[in-house]
Image (cartoon, rainbow, N blue to C red; front, side, top):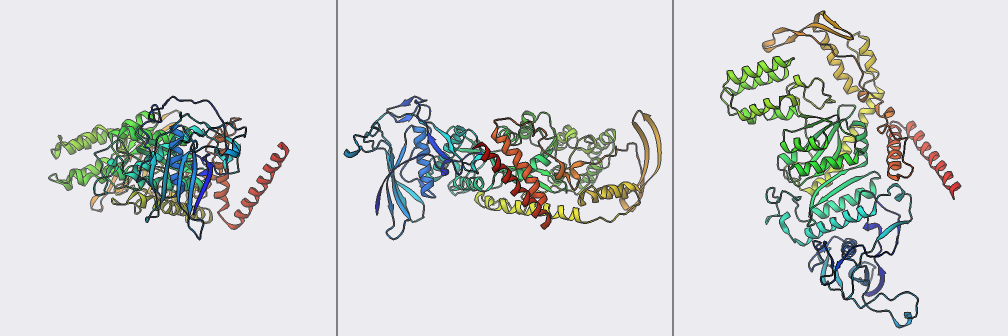
Length: 638
């Protein structure tokens, strides 16, 4: 059955793909003069000929995807789209074919000639014809590119009316359009195989041929698009940015869901850049930005898919994260020893302390030193120099003894490690806050955040499916730890008043770590005051420690750290901490700032409300009361 449709392509909900959704918006077209010059001969705007034009053989997952692509192409080329014909199955309203054409196609009917509306149709032949094929995808079967009229730019402005979901996002529509159109370019390149540099002949991923664009298999761009669209609709504070080459190929992607974005406010002071997938050439080119919460658990602060381990890609990623957190610099950044990372961090986070992951360094000891003669003895000496020296002079002496005694002065890896010692050796980092993300004793490892969810051969599309499963597990673990910390009293092991004090304040896991230190205190004896310098008092403290062969040694300590309580380790940290200290000095017209602050405040109520049934009832009633009060304000304004 054929149906003639006179439907012009105004932006619809499906058109809106950006950092902010526009569900519920009714967009109103505003006529304006063309803002660009156009090449009439080639029917494309000057400077925009790199856009992948419609071609026979292109396939899309749905009619909406195909329609949105052609609409995006038309906007950039300078014409509007109309649905000329549609075909539906005889016994259902399921669409199986369509023709999309330029709005200037055909001519007015005779009975419409006397209308006051200006004639705009010229019989333009530009069109695409498509239909559903056996794969259930929509395939382009016929294309006509030529127009018989001048092309001009149209500017679509909003907003005539918005629903409640749309009020939360009032960002620049022009930026949204740019990202949307570029994403469709990537989708078309992916679907058509045009410029198949993203794939090799066997469908596997290559890493060296095209280091400046995201290495994707066929269908990966569509998977990314579908994933971002779904999160955009279901995640109210979802944030993402995309980076494209001049040819429209997807280069880098960054996203943060609402829970992770809230965690950035609480736990963004220390970040671990987990580039395990990149450095080990995983199928999924993933980089995770990881923090640690008040239970000592790792939390996700952002995810990126990068073209390669380059300064450009890492710089883009960090700038994207900085945009998401409104320019709040982390105090400490922990990474692998990577020159590209080091350069990018120096540019984007010049005020942050950049440190190298000690656990990753220790993990590479067998690989880097395993081939040396006397490896076991070298490894023991190395570990002792790293973990048992208390002063810089002791570390320097132990390191010097190791390279001289075992004849490894010219070993490249050890030499480079020594040059970077101020970024990883514990003796140099006593003033650096790690929040528990640094190995403090041998054998401690920092596992990849998506460990057990992503392996070397995991396809990108499979990772996107597993992403939410991994986060759900992490969120459940944090919720259970919250409940356990608030509803249980840990067993005390000493009569120290500060042990009792912190058992009431710290979360259960953090208190266990503190309690271990309290117990170790009983190994100390013969505390002697050596020197007083104003508020600083230097003591000599002796401690009996367990050495090799179960021998007891006595070690001298000359410093006692100040006694303080870390707020971020407390049970009620989230309850009283407001991430944005300037939230009450809001801009009178900045709708995004309003939304972000309201969302953060609401999320605190949600997290507290999930503790028990009584908490839930109170929180739900508070939300209902607040909404009623907001409606009262709205009615007064009307």
